[in-house]
Image: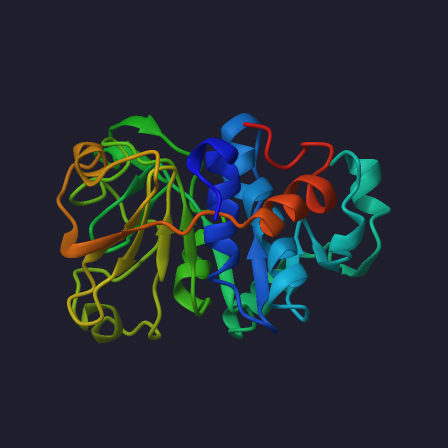
Length: 269
């Protein structure tokens, strides 16, 4: 067992995410811009997928940046257009309709998602802050995230824990999580599902089996339950026996640092 001084938060998030992946999963990974946004949207998910392949899910594959099942044993030295177009892969799908068709047919087991707002029932907002017609900030828009939460079996949310992000009710529902809790999602005509885990820089959350409220599952060794709750605008369900997030093993750290991301292009910030 390693202690918290021997690994980074990014490495902990990678291992936490990898443990949620199963053998045979097809995983959708979106695109990111730069800095922390890239690390959360792309870097951690790609590293987690490769770590799962190396440990317990050898038949797992990903779809990323129009690449279907790129060879994660040969992650390029730089994620520039040249390296992406020459990365060995099963297929390059240049038509967005192919991706959307795969989503609507329920072909993806897991998607990685993030957002400026998430509420107690796992609904996400990447559309607008404030009133939709007169927002204080217009965001990126829905992209394909609406489809992720509608059709993907086990969406995973990766984000940093901040009070402005974890709100009681999102200003606009871009992606329907568990809607208003209970059976409200399926009552509205959506497939069963919704987000399964929320992995942050301070803690890991799940959703109560019946009420579908966000539930604190574990707290990282670098934080405390009190610190986690202080960074949320609502109080999640908290059991008396909240555990510590399982630390990366020495072998997992070796894989991340020496095999998966030796050039530090995935986990930069």
